[in-house]
Length: 505
Image (cartoon, rainbow, N blue to C red; front, top):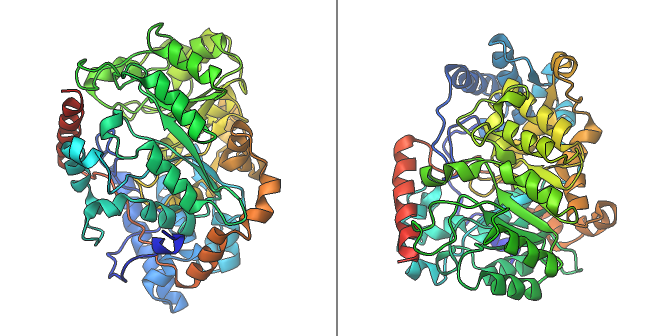
């Protein structure tokens, strides 16, 4: 299977979509969050402003939206509305003329950073899981992008879609392919299929674009043995686990939870990874998977295991962010499992884990959710950079659940924490150097990569060649893929929970 196959199967008449999205889309792990009146107004203004700019330049609207000017004009409209609403703790700083001048637009939303996305997903359209967990298949069929036009709707979530969305339609340089919460028998991305995706993407000259996690549920029978098998099959980037997903068969069908410092589950898993020489433990924290596992969404255990295992690295997926908790300045009095990023910070402080130590905060889904409120975004990023450390905040997007991550990349390039917030709360300035760290240099250090040595290879490998051929005819969909309404989400949740229960029956 060639990467060329990642191009769209057929041209399509696209519905109108902005290139940078403020919407309610969920990745399926949380209930969609309706847009506020301010955010809906920002979208309306962006639609009007981009249409006017395209007309002024004599361009078709879609062609304009696919350009750097289109992205710049969208962010300009958002920033204008947010500032008028008093959301000034963070700003999208884009020169007004960038809506019409390609060079100014490119300077604002473009770049040549080494972008290393440490959280990607896709599913395997074929595999035993479709027979073992028909509920999981029905869940995926219920997502909006299941109507992408392929005769088998699961192709809409395939490696081909990932290759196009991430490596053709965004500036992503390298990535880590991760996993979803599921037992081995009904995992929609088996380890062998993840290996196959890696082989498809690996360049002919030996450059690796894709690293792999291996999924582990420590209480599932044979879990530690499978960890050894996976580590023997490929150089693993890390092990991925979900403390909100109960790994004990019969204990609620995967709903429930455990802690990393649990002597029967968490600690043996960490010890096994350590024995195998895999130093990265990636753990989903925050973003609730189910009501049954709520307490285990907290970060109480992160500081505990980080202090106990100083030679291990603990990567906190989603940074402990909770959609139910608006992020503000750090408040030590809010320590507890339902306080979002403050709970992560409190755990580190309680266990004397210093900034830039062995705990890392990952931004997948989290950045996308706070993009729509720059005041919240400034607090979230500021707290992570101060308390977890400027060297320990990692770029991730949770793609392909949200389609191409290019809008997240462009928004982050233009985002700044206000001087007022820097002075009041001690947050750092989001300089170009600091953004380069977050985009990829921090992750490269964690995963043992050397970006400067990789750059020459990445510029001439087959992925780059295919992208060069694709760019003159680029056809980004600007589409997001997850449930967008409460009804869609609840229907998806029922199907997923039925699939999980069936997997241990």
